[in-house]
Length: 379
Image 1: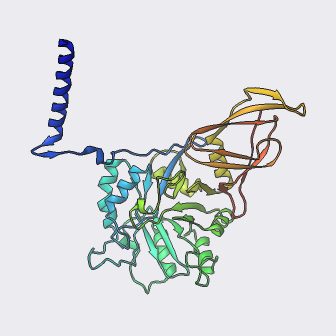
Image 2: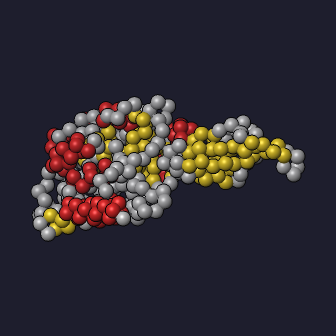
Image 3: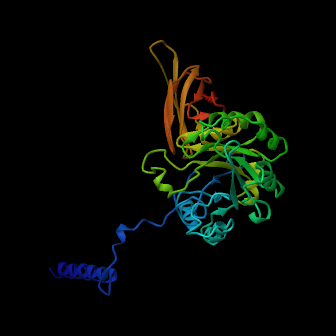
């Protein structure tokens, strides 16, 4: 009895002390309502010795037509596992100028200290906002914007882009085709050919937000330009992407970089080592998408075999997806399941005759009309 009474007393005192810690001057902290301070890590294995960095190089703040303060963009990126971002407010379009003093560099200056504390790489950038056509262009890895990019609307489109090129910026064409009702808005116009030939066009947004610009992927492949995927987010990111649904995340560019540094990101962008990732889809040049798939997927040797009704030997194989990517395969030749779904961070067991069946990965695009085709090594 004494032992039971002592135990009850200790439990009572523990609860009393706990409650006393939660109540301070009559205020009780309801911590269970607070969102945990945690980062959602996106796991993707190294690809051919390169680190796969998650990047978003197109977003806006109140310093142009966005709805949030610059530090919010950093906080969102950290929480969602993004390694590098660029705030690319419009140079020529500042609809909040009556409430927020226009300043082309201010968003970067405000966000930088928080980015340094959080370990998020902040790449300085801007959006060159011209009429469509030719449209909008993002310039990242820039210097002082007032040095070479002005709000002078009489300045020609070419002069505006070439000023960025003069500062060795990385320039990509934003969301071609976003205004389909305008003639020339989704065409390889002489203006685009001109800046391309003059080394002032480095990439194209193949995915902008939830829009897959399919012709842009073909242009990147045919003209050796960098494939980009961005959110172009204006509002709070969680209002654009429902992260409570499976396989839903913000659109991003997967950059295969030597190191986790801005210099390595720039080298990888110049070398065209990128893949756009949007929802459950991957878009990019065939060699990059293939390398990414091979790094993520592991087919183990057969662990069991048996004869089927026709007397053929059927083997069982385990396939591991060691990444947070999603792959959906449809067989086009050989023996094996007609469809295989490799969910993030999971394994599948399939049965098939030994060989190398061919599959199209229908959640990838290496051209507007072509999926990545792979042979599964079933041994």
